[in-house]
Every structure is written in structure tokens, then in C-alpha cells.
Amino acid sequence: MKNFFRRLWHNFRFNFGTLITFELLYKLFTIGVISPAIRMAFQGILKLSGYSYITGDNLGELVTNPLTIVLTLALLLGMAVYSMIDISAAIFIYDRAEEEKKTTLGQTLRFSLKNSARIFSRHNMLIALVMLFMIPFLNIGVGLSFVGTVRLPDFWVRYIRNHLWVGILVGMGILLMVYFILHWLYSFSYFTLEQKRFRLSRRFSRILSKENEWAGVVALLIVQGIFWLIYQAISKIGVLIIVLVEKAVEHASIPGAVFYSVITVFLCALALFVSAFVVPVSFLVITTLFYHFKDKKGFPIIHVKAQEPYIRRFSGRFKRNLTGALLAVSIVLSSVYIYGLSTGRYSLNVEGNGNIAVTAHRGASQYYPENTMAAFRGAFMQGADVVELDVRETRDGQLVVLHDDNVKRVTGVDRDIWAMTYDEVKELDAGAGFSEKYAGEQIPLLSDVVRFGRFSGIKLNIEIKPTGHGDDDIVLKTVSTVKQYGMENNVVISSMDYTVLSETKKADPDLKTAYITSIAYGDLSKFPDADAFSIEASSVTRNLVHYVHKGGGELYAWTVNDETRAEDMIADGVDSIITDDVPKVKGYIYDSRSSAWYGQFVRTLLGRQ
Image (cartoon, rainbow, N blue to C red):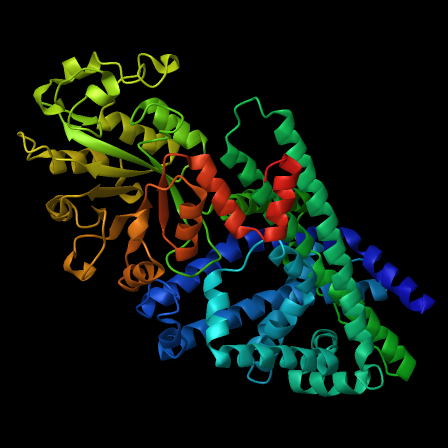
């Protein structure tokens, strides 16, 4: 046993530089490029199959659709080949260490690519299936840790509970995984080192593991336990530090959404970083056991021959610079993706149409005077995904941002907006009534807000409110303003007047529209010009959400400011929650994604219940 651990340590450290460089490049490239590509490919499969969502209503149809099955299998095959690159590289590096030979990044990459391509041979296709069962097991330590901090979607839990056959399939999958691990654990080593066909690799693996069937499984479970402990320890310490920093600067007006985003970014990054080393370390154990049992049984050890890399003619300095550049690009891309996951821009959840967005109602109106630039800038700082605003037209044809027909409530002046010129509107104070701190805030032009959205990147939900007093062109003017600043893909045109949506579609069929209603009852398909429905929260039900999603639409719930209502909307799976208090709702969504234990841990540290 002492010789085994000595061999294990030697194989790990001998080519450590190449190992760590390859793994960093591979995992960062996976996070920054491959993961987004897989997500986009899956979304593409759904669209090609005629779906834009997954819910309990259509999952049965989806998994029995021939086109979906073929495309999904092709995607899974590609994922297996890509995973094999990592495994091949790790085994190759350890084999070179076993021979006391140094290896380069180029040699490792060339061999791993060539070996992975062998999966496409008809004799080796089965290894792709084994790969898909093995990889989850090799990541179970980190996987359980991350699942411990991220709550599984209710949709999946409900579906498994309500469909016995799904539970049976999951159980069969677990049994198959155990079988593969027990009998075929060393097939990857035979396949990679001795270049055997997978059928022979499986046969030799069974022979090698005979009388030692559980040794590899136990060793891998120990590895998983170690990684589980590492993740748990670092995550708790990291969250504690973040909370202490937040408490130290709690008077610095840092938005609550920023705090929750920092925790989520940290947990995502930590899980991805720790998982980067699970597979190579697992195969370090497997490969060393492979050598150990071969020696014990007197079987010959066949080492792989390394070919020179294609870039051998370049200088060492060029290679180092190239590696550094690749690392830098990979870090940037992976950082963007991790941030997108943490903020909800990207979603690993395929139920409905994605993560729940938070829309700032008339801007951050709980903290700033509504429908002012201060409120819109505040919403952006608080981490809102969308800003909701209201548009009306003045007597001289200017589009201004105002909710009421009369300006008295926000300015103290009793006049109708349609009877005023913009020069008169500019003289009004829309901030002093909220707080003297915001005295002088004006009623902004729509163009000011759209320009702000263009440069800040925040999306806009523009509610058009016709007055019927000479503003027949308000829709065309709004659409023109949106196009002027290139915001077509980041704007929703909404209204309680359905004819506004029809006029919007006539002006530009590609603009997204939303029909606003306080009560949803009847056949929503009678509103073909509505891409989404903005519904008063008390009228929203889970069945209604599924019904809207089934038609390919989205559902926004307004106006949600209390915890109970927010939790209901999150559980129902709405696409956006419209609120006056962005930080509060952001916190509720964070809690919904986190396990109860983790949420309580954070609240306890903060001294909040």
C-alpha cells in the first residue's frame, strides 16, 4: 500500500506543470465556450422540434419526438467525445510520468484529440454511453455540494414524483452506473494506453478487476469525499467573509442585489474551479490502480508513444506567450458566463423560458421618484433586469415618461399632460414631492430613457398610454425612437389597449409586445399580437403560466412587493416579476435558488430572520 501511494504522488507531481496548464485551459474553455454552446445547441434542438420551452405539459411529447431524440443523441455524442479529451489527456500525462518522461502541452493535446476521435469508430461507440454514466459519478462530490446550495427546480421534482416510469429510469441509470464502475473501470486505461477496441478494453478490465472489484470504487468514493469536504469548507468560509465585508460597509449604500450576486458568483466559480480537478484526480487514482494491479498479476505494462507536437518548430517563448494568451481569453469568456449564470442572464433550468427576470416598476420607485432618470439609474444600480416605464404624448408631439394623465400627483401642478407643451413640462419638478433630495428631477423624454437603456444594457418595458387627445401617432413615434437607438431586441412594447399592440406589429412585426390586464380569463389565443401577458399578480396561477408557455408566450406579474406574493410567483414560474423594490425581490429569488440550509446560513450571519 505504501508503494501505491508513493507511485500515486510521483505520477501526480512529475508532469504537474503540464497537467495544471492543460486542465486550466480545458476547463476555462469548457466554461466560456463549450457550456454556452451546449446550452444554445439544446435550445436549437427545441426550436427545430417545434418547442420553445419544457414543462410538464409537453415533456412526454418531447422525449418521444423522433427528431428530438436524434438531435439529442448527436449532442450527447459530441459531449462524450469532448469529455474523452480530458480523460485522454490525464491518462497520457500520468503514463508519461510512469516512464519518467516529461511531456509538453502540445503533445498532450495532440494525443488526446486523436484518441478521442476513435469514439466515432463503430467498434467504440459504446464508450460514449459509458462516458455519460461515468462522468456524473466522478463529479458527485462537487455535484452534491453544489446541489446543496442550489435548489432543484420544482418542475423536475414534481415530474419525477408524478411519473413512476421516470423514477424507474433514474433507478436503472444508477444501477448501470454501478455496474460500469465495478466491471469496466479500467477500460479507459486499456482503450487509451494500449489503443484497444472498447470491446476488448471491457473484457480486459473485467479480468484486471477480478478479486479487486470494490478497490477502485472505494478509492473513488474517498476522492469524492475529499472534494466534498473541500467545497463545503471553502464555500462556508467564503460566504462568511463576503457577509462580514457586507456588514462592514452596510452604510455605504451598496444595493442588496449586488450582495446576493457576489455570493452567487462566488459559489458558481468555486463549484466550477473545484470540479476542474475532480476528473483528472479521479483518473490519477484509476490509472495508478491500473498499473498497480497489472504489476500484482504479472501483466505487461504497455506505454503509449508520444508524437511531437505540430508547433515544435516554434520557440519556447512563443509557446509560453500562446499559452498565456489562450488562458487570458479563456478566463475572460468563462468569467462572462459565470456572471451570466449568477445574474440569471443564462439559465441551466430549461423549464419555461428561462430564469425569472426582475422588472423595476417605473424605475426603482420605492427608493426614487417614479419615472425619473434617477429612478432608472437606481434600478440599474440595484441589479434590475428590466425597467418598466410609461409613455404619453404632449400637446406639441413630444413623448414623455409619465404614468398619470394628469401631472398633479408627481409634480403638484394640476394640469393634463396632453394639454401641455414640452417646454412647460420641463419646468415641472418631479422629484421634490418624493424627497427634497431629488428636487429638480424632471419628467424625462422617452428618448432620454431609451438612450440610457442603449448605453447601460438594461432592457426596457415601455407601456404606451394613449390619451385620445391628438396622439394617434404615439405608437409610430415610440417604435421610431426604439429603432433610432438600436434597442429593438431589448424592448417590450406593452399596453392595456390591445390596438396599440396591433399597431406596433404593423410598424415592426419583430418587436416584442405585452398585453397588460388585471384579470386573465378566457382564451388568450385571441390576442395573436401579444407575445407576452402582463397580469396582476393575484390573478396569476401555475396553470395560467403553463398555458401561456404552452403557446410560446411569456407571463409578467405585477406589482409584487411582499414576500408571500413573490414566493408564489417564483413557484408558479412567471417570466418576470414587476416590483417597486428590486433588492427585496432579488433576495427572494436568491433564496428560491438556494437550499433552505444555505439561505438560513446567510440570514443568520447577517442577523436577519
